[in-house]
Structures are given as C-alpha cells and as structure tokens.
Image (cartoon, rainbow, N blue to C red; front, side, top):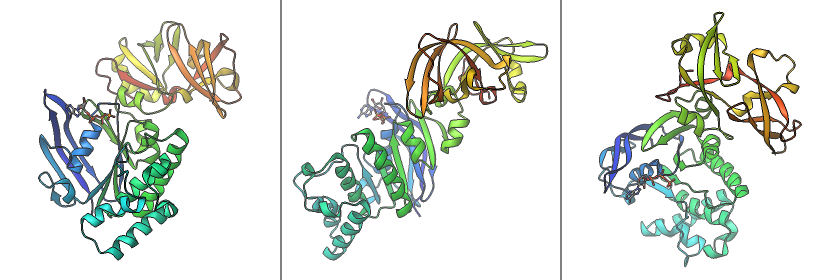
Length: 367
Ligand code: ATP
C-alpha cells in the first residue's frame, strides 16, 4: 500500500519566508493527485518535502505506514520526474534508465528486463543506444519517466514534467501519463501551475495559494463548486467573469445590480443571498453561461444585459467574445457560428441558474 499522508506540514525558508503553511492531506493508494497553483504558492516545496529533497520545518510526512521525516530521499521508495528531466548527458538512454538500479546493485538480468519493459511501455525501445542530445524533448521526457518506472517505486512524484514541451507534445504526453497511471496502478503526485493539466489528469486536485491549501476536490466539483473567488478564477479557461455589485429586493424578488445591469436571481439561491440584501457582493459567471440572445429562443428580460463587442476570438468550434456592459468587461464562450462584428451592440442572456456569488470582503463562496 502506498498512501501518503501530510500532517500539518510547514516549511519556512531563511528570511522567514513561509513557503508551505499547515498543509494536511491524505493521498490514497493508486490515486493520481495534482497539486496546482500560481508560481510561488509552495507546490514544489511540498513535493520536495515528500521526496526528502527539502528539510521539514514542522509537521510529518508519512509514506505507507512509515513516518519518513528522517529517512533520506534515496531510501523513501519514491521516484521523482523533474521539469528539466535531469538526464545524464554522457550516458545512453539505457544507461540513464538503468542508473539507479545499477547503483543499488540489482542483478544484470533484472535490470535488463526492467529497462526493456519500461522502454516498451513508453515506446522508446529503439532509442536505448542514443544519448539525450540525440533525442527530441518529448523523447527525453519519456526517458525521464522511464527512469522512474524501472525502480517500481511506491510513489511517483512529478514536478511540472511537461512544461518544457511544445503545446502539442504536452497534450500528447498528458494522455500518455494518464494511460501510464492506469497501467501501473501506482500512487502519483503531480505538481503543475497549469489548470488544464490539473483538470485533465487529476483524480483529485489540490489548489494552493500562498503556501495554504484552498480546496481539495475532484475536477468537476472544483469547477462547479469552488469554495472561494481565488479557486473560481484559477480553475477554468477562459476564467470566470467577476462583477462587483449589489443585491436588491423588488416585489419579493432578488436582483443583482451594477451600473446599467440588473439580473434576477433564481429562487433556490434566495435563502443564502437574502442576508446580503442591500449589500455589496461579487457575482461570478463562467463564459459558457453567457449566450448571445440571437441564439436563445426563450430569453426573458430578467436575465438579459446590453453590451458592446470589443474583440472576437474564433477558436474553431467555439468563439470567445470580449464584451463590455456599461461598466464591466466580460468574456463569453459561444458557438463557432456566432461571429458578431467588433463594435456591434448585442444582448446577452445570462444563465442565472449557474451563477456564483462571493462575499466581497472574505471572497468566500456564498452560492
Ligand atoms: P513555481 O511554480 O514558480 O515553481 P511553486 O509554487 O512551486 O512555484 P515554491 O518553489 O514551492 O513555489 O516556492 C514557494 C515559496 O518559497 C516562494 O515564495 C519561493 O520564493 C520560496 N522559496 C523556494 N525555495 C526557496 C529557498 N531555497 N530559499 C528561500 N525561499 C525559497
């Protein structure tokens, strides 16, 4: 069993830089857990503490049923794949992949079998005699992963392993790593700043900011039910639209208003929003919940907003519209056939059943 448990983990660097603060997290056996967050949020430091490459200021790291705080990296039964691959340039692919096993004095036949097995899984069997400089970026990345696989570790750790690849190769390697996880049935912890990578790879995702965990959830729950404005804005591309405004009540109905903008709330949100009546609030709506009225047959004035098109970004199957209401700029994600002109007036229909509201001061999610 290879579950990993982080208990009140803290890392303070010299100069009182708190990189990781009170991180508690259980990673289940065979789980693919992604830690995501902006640059400097402490995700690499967390991973490096699990690996044993960084000392722990406070708290505990458990791997399997052992507390490993004082166990050196080489004895932790983990394998780490780095962003820069860290291959030995003077060694062949075979030598790179077998290095850790040779160091541990594995029998030659065992090494040979493990390297060939890993090379087969990764489709690099024909490259075993080449040196890293004779490989493409994607091939080097496969070798780096292969070097981890041959060790059959309890836990795989990945630190931004795809960020040196071009966009197309990144997408391909993403799929390959997903397949690899299914094949190897191992526990994997993967660090990235890329929310798309996190959403497409993780069984569960941990979102971090300023050294603190913001939310741990599966991708869909994270997308649909972010706990605060930070998570809501970080997960999703293009990002969620945020508008600051006020909640007002008229004829028993609740509305969100902002200069030149008034939309009715759906009734099942009333209970949670009523305490905010007359107060400032932040309204959030994902780009796919904004429609062009021309393509909505049953639009009601209650959830319609007038706007001007500022920019049109055709993506093929869909179009991103950058639009401006009286005061706010929004992004809408509409069908590929919808291509209004820049400067054109349009009416937007907002799907208020998917609206999010955040407390303006605490930024915590209300609904
Ligand atoms: P990135 O995506 O840019 O790698 P990250 O989320 O992985 O960022 P960390 O590398 O874990 O972030 O760094 C967290 C914080 O700790 C940052 O403020 C960073 O400047 C600081 N930090 C990291 N390593 C050290 C160090 N050796 N000494 C001092 N501060 C450090």
